[in-house]
Length: 150
Image (cartoon, one colour):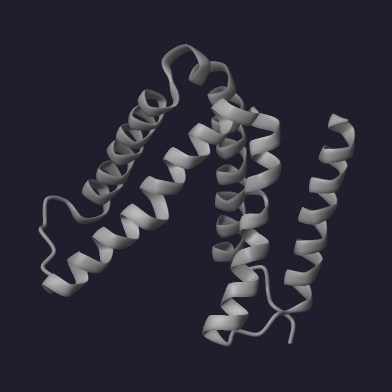
């Protein structure tokens, strides 16, 4: 089955590219700023600015409408925010402080590969050839960066 390049797919690809570029700036910029202000303060500022972006996007899309969900939904969202965002962000900043931005970028590049493996194991999702090619690109990039650093 051939997938068409609809406007949504193109926008999605551009958003992913934008995320990759801004993440690279975050890692490299963190290497410059963290030694000066500390990893905890850097992360706190980064999360505050990210929150401003999130709330701004919500206001643009929903206005001041308050969404009502069950208590369980809010509890699950809180847990996801802490486990999937706050803790990894602090750990990444500490990693930048301890081993530098280059090595941190190498270590964190395992994330997409781990996501594919976990989706297969825990969710029963199929592994496609596109994912395998992307995984090969990620691992090749990691190896090239690793060898270049020596």
